[in-house]
Length: 553
Image (cartoon, rainbow, N blue to C red):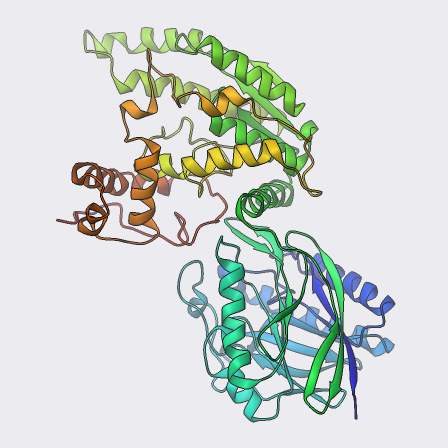
């Protein structure tokens, strides 16, 4: 009877659709695990396909390629090395399953299919997968009964209890659990509920990747039968970590494993967004990025994140001054660029503004200047950035924050032009907090310089779009100290207007913000993607109609 096991956690970064590359990544991790004497290597959910594959998984040729890859991986285990548990889509008859497979001794030794298919937030798996009809049987390996569950099956009662009743001795849970600020606590609470109900230890294995708007930060862990997290794999880092298990009269216990420290707060969010930028730019094969550096806090933070993700040599910043650009903004943009070590140039937009004034004068006549002329300035800047992108092959990063995206304080085809928006799910007050964190801290996975990279004046001066004389954001919006909490209550918490007012906020402000939130939906539909960090983001989570007559009266 087996009384010891060495189980490797393969926290790797698969790429959606790159089946051959994912097979190579899987085998590389297996080789590392073999050197450490592993008996078994566990990978994340749908590691062969990459997660989430969305409607790509409905393509028959893709399904066949994934299944063939599982068979190729199974054949590799004929060498006497570690067995593997890998995830992949699997077609049987007319049904397409989200599957996990034990590969051992040159064959597929067991197949297990996901029962609970999530259909909320970023998930819509019932659109593409068929749920398994029954909870799985334990999966036997070296005489040990493993309770193999896939992601959502851990989060709800049923599967773990059924597996334990059939003799499962420990749980193996491959995950595609997206990053959000509350994820670590939520995952451990769900795992603890299953452990408390069964008195069995658990291994949680997660993906590591930025995939479009969704992030996966790894953070695998081992939980003992008392519900205590014993061992932790790092966040935001690839690793093949060995866990060693012993069996005694009380059952299986993990006696050795990775001992990473998990981080929270601003560091966790900053590193998550940095990973998102790195993966989005590099996986889509862009040489680098170009950013409009205005001398304001949003573009400065975007530039710092880009440098930390890609290195200064891949980041190109452009100041595009107009007649309204202040001397301070010119100085601050240049100082920020120097501190970050990026390429920096200035391209004035006044010749373009004058040309548009001349072109439109016969049509506009003597009409008063208004937001039209302000938006022309923003759109000229967007044209310049896209021209640089086309000419030199760099992706444009947009710089709008969640506060602005919420209320439409952004210009379509202007400052919203671009391929990716790092700040899309960060409110303005969070932008300030991340600037201060980055100036005071660093981390090993950040490629930028240590120390202050965002000049203090950028953080402390009143925010302004500088599209007209003496313009300030608070001329058009409530103070961010008021706006951001109202938005969080409307967006993340879906609170009623009367309940927000009961918390002490002015009813006129709340109703105005609610109205702006609804009427800006058409802009958000045309905005570039950005990383999800909050419980509710625009796009995959919050899907409101553009034509919408509802107001909370």
